[in-house]
Image 1 (spheres, rainbow, N blue to C red):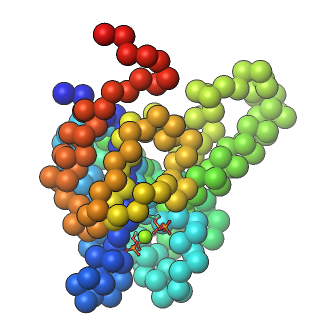
Image 2: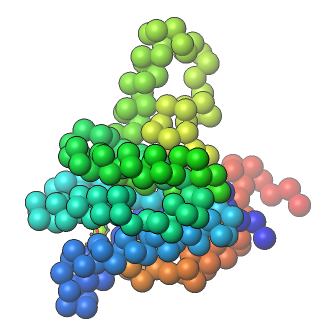
Length: 234
Ligand code: IPE
Ligand code: IPE
Ligand code: MG
């Protein structure tokens, strides 16, 4: 059966998962981070080449200082001291997003996990952190303008395929895009890369989205007839 090369997850519903259990929102984020670690290993075991996850959007800075601080500290905890399973399972961690507005200790933790996993080859875990899809396209456009100006790129050579090279990470297009937590929207997630992604929405809140649920999403993907604008030929 066809395993998608690039799976992406909008990890939503941590807060509601916690509230339903009478816990603090922060406890939902902590549970979500554990879930992510398990899913990354499972994705690698399934043969998925790239797993992109939405961990913190540029718009998430609108939340209370308490919640933002918690998420930043959780990021430091995971990228500095946890994630050992990911590191030891040949998964390479990369990040997409803007560095601006991130604390230096957060950036340092991101560097630590990137450095520890830079030679891992089985699967790429692309963590979208301080990420916005519109920002990514704007930032890519600025890089394009710069390359045209300095002569590295000829204006007429730019096309939809090599535009990927200007995004935060040069990854293949998304095959399967999952959003947990009941909402049916993209909230700015990987707008360029999601062009022909199969969309899978599931009510399960992210902390409860386990390996079996990922298997189910892939089973759904395997029923999709991907035409890419063509017509069915058989
Ligand atoms: C997703 O869960 C994690 C982040 C956006 C950081 P939420 O925090 O959005 O959880 P809900 O949607 O409020 O339940
Ligand atoms: C999207 O979830 C961002 C992440 C999962 C990190 P949000 O909870 O921020 O999105 P909205 O506000 O429901 O659109
Ligand atoms: Mg949410």
